[in-house]
Length: 208
Image 1: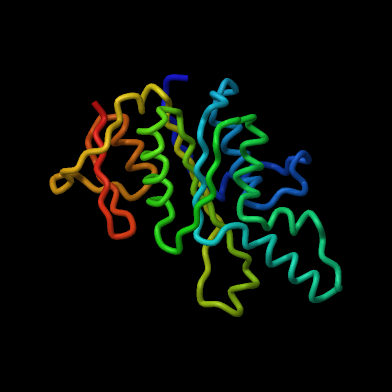
Image 2: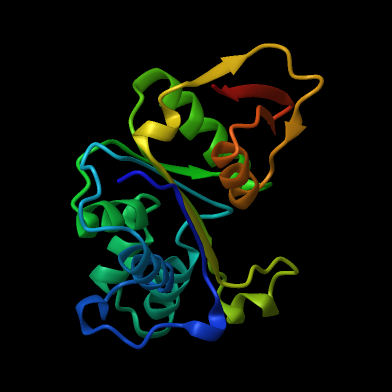
């Protein structure tokens, strides 16, 4: 596969219900629908997967605790899906990816956390990377919290070829900052140097 790929969830074009994923979470269904539609079937199984979110799978966690409180019954598949790595594992399993997977959480700008981690790994390992950002917040929790996030999801796939000359550089003062997947997609494709401001650090990258 020679092309980098970017996809972003559009709630107006939500896919029809897929019976294969009837027990999957909202995030799982959204992401696998976009991934299967966009990525080729010959995805290298050494691809490394990085999924970042604000708070992980809060929807099944909420539904599990709600059922336990109201009915005294904890539904096992909800508990299973509430685990922080469940979405990343589900995606890797469905796409038959054998490379390492990482589930990251950042209360502020999780896209930057994913990009920084994925690109540093790419410099070390030279494997293709699949970067994912996804969040979903149950409407009912809006009644008890001022914090809410609409369901959103996006991914960026960067090929082994496009990352083969990526390197970390120390001089970042003149570099343009990259804060979102779409900006990174553009910088990599145009072979522009860039930096990521992450947790009070700046990491500079160059694509030769």
